[in-house]
Amino acid sequence: MYRLKYKQLCTRFLNLYKIKNRPVFYQVFSRFTIQFLLVFLKKILKMKFKAILFAVAISVSTLAFAQETSQKKVSPPPGNALVGDTYGAGVNATSESKAITVDKLSKKLKKENKKLENVAIKGKVTDVCEKKGCWLTIQTEDNSQFFVKMKDYAFFVPTALKGKNVVLDGTAERKVISVDEQKHYAEDAKKPQSEIDAITKPQEEIRFVANGIKVVN
Image 1 (tube, rainbow, N blue to C red):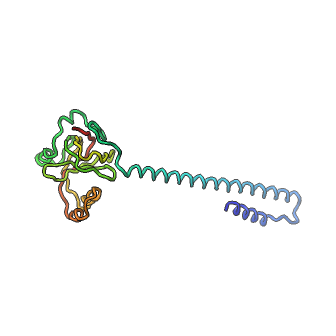
Image 2: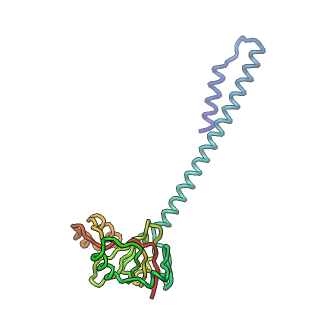
Image 3: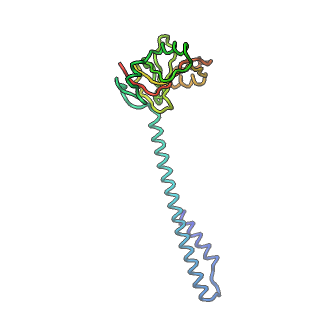
C-alpha cells in the first residue's frame, strides 16, 4: 500500500512538471526541485508509516495490559484467612478489646442513633462475594442480614474468610436498601432465582463499612 501511494505521487509530479522547450538552467532547476520534493515526500510517507505502526503497537500493548489488569481484578485475592491475618487498615489492639457483637450493635443503633462511627464489632463470616471479595456478611442471632462493604473499595478479602471469626473496625448505619440493590447482592451471592424474585420491597438493614478487618479465634 505504501509503495503504491509513492508511485502514484511520483507520476503526478512528473506529469505536472513535464519539461519541454525551456532554458537549460530552468530544466536543471526543475529537475532538482522535483527530485527534492519526491525525496521529501518519500521521507514523510515513511515517517507516517512508522508512526502508524508505533501507534498500533502502543494500542495493542495498552489493550493487553487493560485485559490483564481487569482479569486480575475480577477474582477475590488469594489467601487462607489465618488467625492474625489483616485486611485494609487492620484492627488495633484497643479496638479489638472493645469489639461488640452484632446484636449489641443493633440495639445500640436503635437506642442512640442511626449511625455509629469508629466502632468495632466481632462475629462469624457467613458469606463472601465470590466475584471480587468486595463484601461479606456476618452471622446474627436472629439470622437477619448484616452486610459489610469495604470502605471506598480500597481492599478486598479472600473467600477463605467464610466461616472464620473476625473483628471489623469501621462505621455502622441503619439504611433502607432498595429492591435493585438487594437483588444485585443476591445475584453476587449466587442465590436461587426464586429467592431473588421474592425480593419485592425495600428493607431496612444495618450496613457496615469496614476500614479494616482482622481474623481472630
